[in-house]
Length: 585
Image (cartoon, rainbow, N blue to C red; front, side):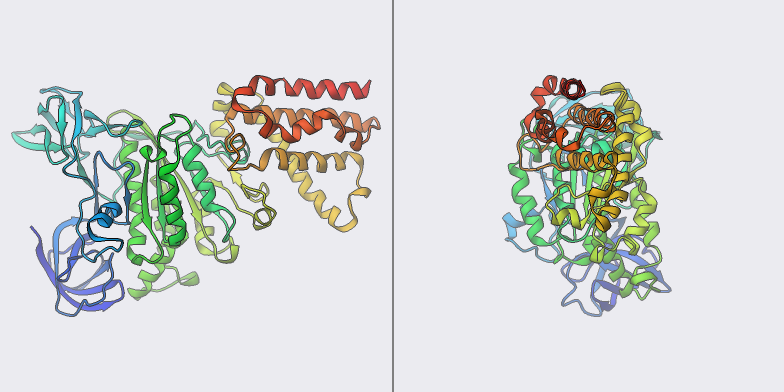
């Protein structure tokens, strides 16, 4: 039952100052005014409280009552999340559209999950079993791809008194009862959890397995581990959203959560219209069966933009606790930081660089710290990987959000405007990007793909760095003055950039490359370089090498060899060596 928490004293945009009662606490969720606008307590001072309201505050006036139930902003967790589209505070947008039209009415209080839909529940424990926090009580087939595990809430412990028999139940039906020292605690298929509080785990684990994305520039040069964090900074039009779409479709994460935080409405519309039509390439089922969307466009209330990131990461942690690998796509954290800046200004806090609040670095750290590979309370192993786009104004990577983000992530995919303008996608710069996960995942590559992987990667990275230095000379005096070995470096790097790094997302063959295919392509190019270097030192010209049929085959191998032709691709390195040996003879 909601209690009166105070009266509105002053309204400053999305920030409402109230004369508060003594029982109001920080981060409590409140309902403001006659329309019960959803808000959150963000500041307490003397007898006043400051609330950030997640809806339009037009028509609020001094004297309006504010209500609270005494708990923080939360999300509802249970079967039915997958395939849904929510706003920043977990209101189901499709349900609101069907009941109220295309615009969200202020104060609308729709439940995130359908309370009328039945789910087939299968118990996996029995009466008398220990009910430790996070224990799996039963299972529900949420979609054709995902089995939803009904968990004991993390703050509940005791003994299972009874659990429901196998059958169909709604999320409002009690499916178990747990007793502790005589007290009975009902358990439902749905539970609540505050968004700003990380869900507890047994321990964090070392990272060791890469998140295979199918994008060659990422998996081969700048990989991310499952449970890792990566920032994707880039100016307007450099392809941040497209990269996240590709990763959502092709990465080997079990579940994808896409948070559109403050993005333009037309971009989110494109995502929401196209995603339901996409088919998961591995299971041939709709991709939406393992995806949750949080759509918070730039014309929605700015405070809800700030909450959307926390909503997304809490949903990710929930599925992580079931033993799944979850990928969270945040697009973009710059809009989230701008929301922090606006709310901080309304609260009259002291601004720092470019007007951002002093607590921006700590908020970023709190967010990225919630990623990781963990052992959940029930002993299952799961992970949350964060792929966060950053939109620096004017492409300036020295601005505060980008520079602070780089402190808390171990991988950076820097998008280059020149590459984007030349239609080279993904436009990830091989000079400015980096990954610190190489040592963590190299053993996986060596065990599952080939022991040469790291050595070949080092060879090509050194060539790309040499090519970058040589290009400075070429701009001044042209390529003809360079020694033949250096001209070979330029030629091989051009072959590598066009035949390996560039990837066409709408080409049926080239849109995805398995880890094995990437390695075989890399091996063929490095074999060509090593053998060609020997030949040019003996006086054979680069033009003669380019005329070989095998050179053309290397340039077109990304589209010529499908995933079913890897046996043929495996023989390409030997074919290259034989062709070059014939010239030598």
